[in-house]
Length: 262
Ligand code: OOG
Ligand code: MG
Image 1 (cartoon, rainbow, N blue to C red):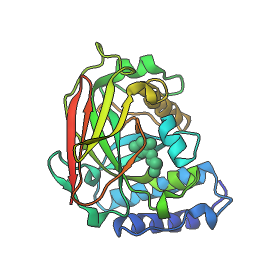
Image 2: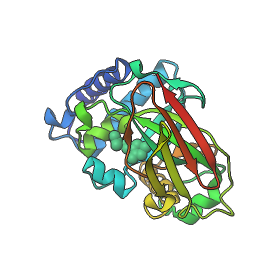
Image 3: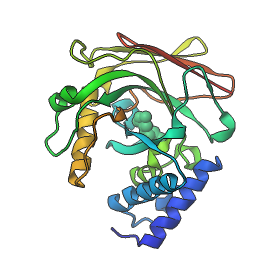
Image 4: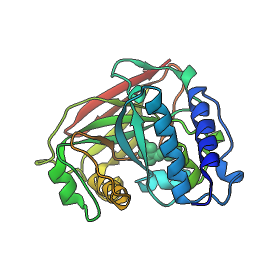
């Protein structure tokens, strides 16, 4: 670690205030180029603790930048991980309030819910599938706190990987009889197709994103408890949204989920 605890706390407070007040900022590595990976995750952790202290519950985890489409769109080359707080969840049928966000984008994902503990190192697709209770379609709304979504990997990790809102819907399906790689994915905005893909876009198999997360947490002595919701990462590029937009996602075998913005 290269940053002291005071600087980490100050950056966490600044980034969280940007989130809560829907204000953008410059990427923090501009001012702190010496920031390392541990510093970045330490800032994310302080943001999490600030939310818990305020009475929020942490309701899940997410992997991000797990598909080539997303890595290319954002100009980075490695997946990242973040957390989901209770108020990020938008019930299907409700509207996402644009006034609470800066410049949201939406992306199609496969959500996993676990039924047993996953603890790295050594987790692989097989361990993840064995530990999966069910999968379901998810729309993630990301909203980088960094101006024009311009960031590097360390800044985005500190910013809890642009996490903002998510919507779950469709059908809960156990994975036994599904090939998650070949599930077709269709996202529509206002009735027009804006993104097409298949599960394999995420690291060759979406369960590989969950295995990576378990192995990364394992390095820190942490595990993924049973019953954890995990977003496995955008399958296609993220798409800009504005007030009045309606977005729907259909995933083969998993049904559909919708959200609107106002
Ligand atoms: C970072 C968050 C990426 C995903 O699914 O790839 C993410 C970003 O693109 O702002 O959530
Ligand atoms: Mg995502």
